[in-house]
Structure formats: C-alpha cells, structure tokens
Image (cartoon, rainbow, N blue to C red; front, side, top):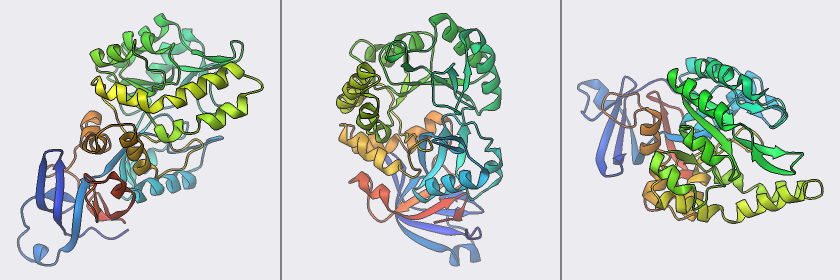
Length: 365
C-alpha cells in the first residue's frame, strides 16, 4: 500500500451514467474537481484512463468459506482478492465471523454487514447460520439488526429432506412479524431464495431484497416490480446448479430436476425481471464455495442475460452505491475509484483488468 499522495486522474471520469468529466483530483484522500494549488498539483501522480466508482459486490461473504467461519488471516486474504478486482464496497450478505476489525484498515474494502444468516433448523449449510424455529425468528432478527450495518439476512428456502425438494422455511406470520421488527430497528431485510414458493409471502410481508431469485415467474415478477423489491441474481453462483443437481440425483431426484430447471431459465428470469423494472444489482456469492474477486464475471453474466451494458455497470457502481446509501464520485467524498485502460461502457469485460485501484485516497493497486 502506498502512502496517500495527490493523484490526478485524466481521461474519462464516469461520474454517473450520464455525466462524464475529463479529470479529477485526489487531495487529502478525497475527490476534488478543482486543481490543487501549489506543490500538491505540480507533484501529483498522474493516472490516465476511464475511472469508475469503486465497484460494489452486493452479495459477498468475507469471513466465511465452505466449512464455516474463517480466521482473520483468511478474511484478510478474501478482502484483498476483492480489492484487487476493483471491489471497494461489499454488502456482506451473512457471515458468522466478526470482521469489524476490517473497518480500521484503510487498505481494505468497506463492508456493509447483514449479521449472521438466520435459517430454519437443519435447513441450511452447516456452521453458517443461526438455526432456529419460527417462534424465535423475531428475536433473532432483532439481534442481527443490531449487530449488522442496516441489513438482516434470512434463508427463505432450502431443501426439505422429507419433501425431497426446495420448500419455504418460514410461515407467513413469522416473516411478517420479523420484517416489521427489522424495519422498526432501521434495518432492511434480504433472503436467500432459489425456488418459487417462498417469494410471494416474503414480498407481501415487506421484504426489501431477494438473493438469487431464480424462482421468479410471470406471477411474482409484477409483484416485485410493484413493491420495488430488488434482486441480486448471483449468476456466477447459479452456474453451479447442474453440478449440485448431479450430486443429489440419487437421493433427491425431484430437487435435482428442479435445480436444473431453475438453471436453464436463469437468463430469461433475470431479463424478465429487468424488463419489468425490478432493481437488479451485482453480487457474486463469493466466500462459500466460490472464490473472491469475481465481480467482473458477474457483470458480464448480467449482460449475457440481456441487461444493457450501461445498466449492468450501474448495478455494480453508481446505482448500487445509491441503493446502499454510499457515495460514488461526488466532490469531497472519500476517493474510492478504479481506473481502466479501456472504456467499460463499450465492453464490460474491461472490468476484469483494473489499471489502478484507489481506496480511501491511497493507490493500492
């Protein structure tokens, strides 16, 4: 990590989807559109290219791997992999690890935490979640609302071994009361949902976001659009469904067939959601079985699904930051930005090769 210096970014500064400037300055760790006076301007480090706000991964798990919580060294390695990819703002969508120490590290991405997953007993990945019954849901939501940074993460559906397929985890009354309690405490609620059955109850109960959302249909898409419920599709993770289905074929054939159907229509589902006006944001689901640093691949997946390139960029930059209540490239805000050799608006694959990464006004990559 370099010391904080004055930086002059020249070329194309993508301030917003419709606003482009020729240059910006990083002075004292903050963004300025005025040339600094004196020696600061004369001795500035010049970086040339296309500048975007630091990218957002809105579904990421720092402090978690496929077995459960990890130590601080592993968490640091995960955060650095995200930073190297240009991800400078993470919505950590559930982690059993205490990663608050990262907030004191100016060289690591900023994290908005959703606390620990809240799941039904024996209905989620071992060692990941609080596993509880519906009568305790309100209390645990209140606990994680206080522990997190304005978000709570539920597991909305998972395989039911007796049914042999995905089923909803919570009764309607329980999620209504729990979401109301989270909102009373100033937190938004999101939920892991693969299948169709849990979606209507969660949306009508007032949920704010759905992760994965592969179960959206022509019946529920209008409801999401009407309520303004966002989705984070995590298509780089949904790509694993066929492998998962193969692994469960013998024991749970109905589940396996269901997972394959959800996978086969994944692009159509995302495009239909976008066309209906549902807010769509970029998330990778890194940290479980997936590697960190996949944000560029997820943006490319959204484009493959039919979302226009500029909107896919917004889903990991300007729009995502606005949704999460964090600044982009406004005057005077902390300088978190990524510079590319090529214009990512012309080809989002440019996101895979950051030229410079500037975090809290420091050139860190």
